[in-house]
Amino acid sequence: MTENRFNRALLEAIDDELLFLGESAKHLVYYSLEKVFQISPEQISEKPEAFHRALETLLGSGGKVIEKQIVKKLYSGLGLSFEDCEGWTLANCISCAKKRNKTICSDLLSSTHGVATLGQHPRRGSE
Image 1 (cartoon, helix red, strand yellow):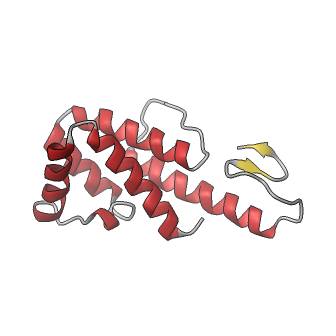
Image 2 (cartoon, rainbow, N blue to C red):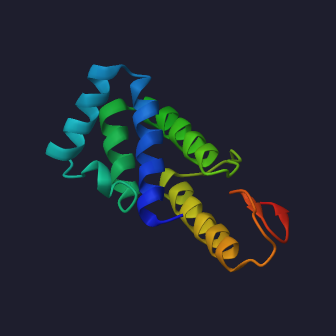
């Protein structure tokens, strides 16, 4: 999976979960991200802490709920499993998803064991 594809998967997860707030609220969040917090949607994967602070400022404690849903959606879309644990952060989860994806993709590209599905290591089974 390329960085570009990862970013699309992340943005899709964010879009879907912000839509839970309603179309107008979703647009307001994106507008505020760009105008108030100077974060474009394309920069979220590189600035997850800033995105977290923006959601926290805009949505209060509801920001953490939306973040968890974003992470679950992202992991699901990438074929990864999200295990809820105390102390998880949006930034850590995004970083972990990127690293696991790069490892999985590198393994798949260098594998001589045939085709494996995303989230399935060709030599070890499920990740």
